[in-house]
Amino acid sequence: MTPESSTGSLPRHIAIIMDGNGRWARARLLPRYVGHREGVKSVRRAVEACISRRIEVLTLFAFSSENWRRPSEEVSLILDLFVQTLKKEVASLNRNGVRLRFIGDRSAFSDKLRYLIAEAEQETSGNSRLDLVIAANYGGQWDISQALRKLALQVQNGELSPQDIGPDVIAAEVALAELPPPDLFIRTGGERRISNFLLWQLAYTELYFTEVLWPAFDEKELDSALLWYANRQRRFGRTGEQVEQQKGA
Image (tube, rainbow, N blue to C red; front, top):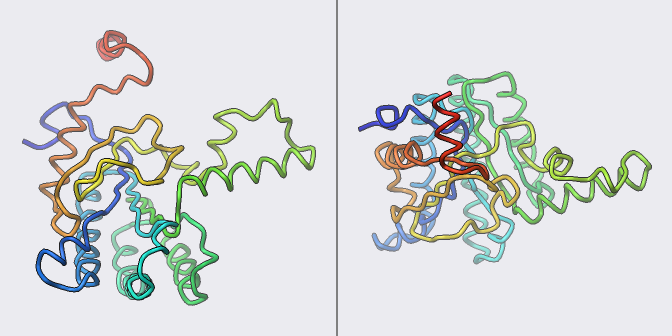
């Protein structure tokens, strides 16, 4: 059964924490780096699956602001893989109509990586088939903090009154402000937390957790998440009866 055959309801925006690369490699007595490399293949599969299902936005948590705490050798290998993947994949993404975006604090990255990120965004900026957002050196608390700093400067400059600051004003300054908020959050690897990912944006997102490790996450696993989502009743503060009445109107 496909998600469409259930209720016809597909998410516009999917956000994923790609967890389990290291454990996938360890279970096979392989270096952790191999797990990260296999994880890139899962990214490719997820992008292709989202395109074929006409998902509008896919946001992937590639490297958190907390991941710098990992062993320096692993961090270096992950960043090198990041560079290699950008060099290899951007042309294909562009041909397939994918617009690539990055969110997070780029200041900690090398000049080379920052250049490749900017180049990838520019090269794919005219595409509209899928928005692929990569969260790199990103944290939800950082995101909200940088939004509040912008608003504080506007108040300081007399451009904004403190009384005018509400959820809508803050939402316009956090990452992904110009995109629909995530409808479906997926975390692979068995953990049951959001780990400082899109804290503001996930306010009304449906949260789906799976034991499957990210390198093993394929089209079938994505369809399982989509089917689960299609059977959810999204209320946004309303009662179930109100939702059903609106659907029948």
